[in-house]
Image (cartoon, rainbow, N blue to C red; front, top):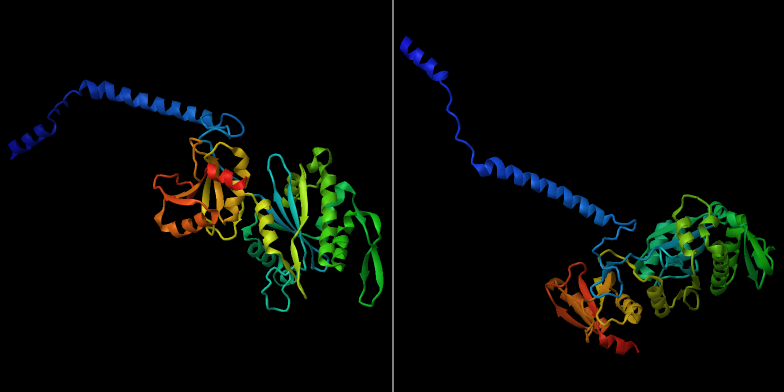
Length: 400
């Protein structure tokens, strides 16, 4: 028994045998390789950071920056647009404007004056179908929905201007000058006529802006929109003088201030909504409206997300004078442009619509028929959009 215990003890404290020596590769080459890999990774990270952050604009060194160069491509920024509604102290809709920015960097844009008395749906069978009634019933949300359905585009945002907000907006310029061909007269419930603004040159003070816009609704639809147009045009011209609109707008913490500062920074077009007068209502002239929408929203937001085919619009000719026409042609066909650019070569003779997903073939063929372009399947075409529209030389002939 003692011998067994002694043997166990000797085994327990027996000196452990040394492990075999590591090979030269594992002992020296592998750590050296690992160290080089770490250093190279850090170097690549720093280099990529320098490339991505090379300048304040965030442009990369390797990107094609020449808009006319073969192979140039860029994602587009959807048109910055806004629904601007004005209500009076009684909460009634008295003025409505759809605005769109032409260029976020350079400024400028367009405003479309819409009458509160407009009936957006000529098939409406209810007693109260105009925009003013829609606003009374459901507020700004319902009004915006009606406009989205009418224009078939989405808007970046919507804003409500009250008498108090208008006072703050116009205060920096003191007053807005408007010339009236006729006096704006309010008729009370008792039949008494009160001259709100006299005929001739009128200075509209900040606290009376909503009074002016309200009084314009005493007139027929066309004249009401013209009065609103004259006000907006005069005010934007005033804040845009000397190229510093931001200095003539207050810091109210409202997105409409930033929007108007950009619109007023360059040329601004102010137009009135196209209408058709029926026996008892005013409805949209849909043919004219379609042309206005294409001009107002160069890169529109889809009214319903996913409702429009996304398009990569590529110039295949090298003639860039047709880019604007091609864009309008595609937008008019009901598509949404997400990328613009140039093909690798400028020798395309025939315009075409190219797709890569067989599941959307019916939609693509419908778009091709609307554009008058042939349709082609290519599973290797760029996946950044659902379809690629290539503009060829035949398009140049068709628009001449």
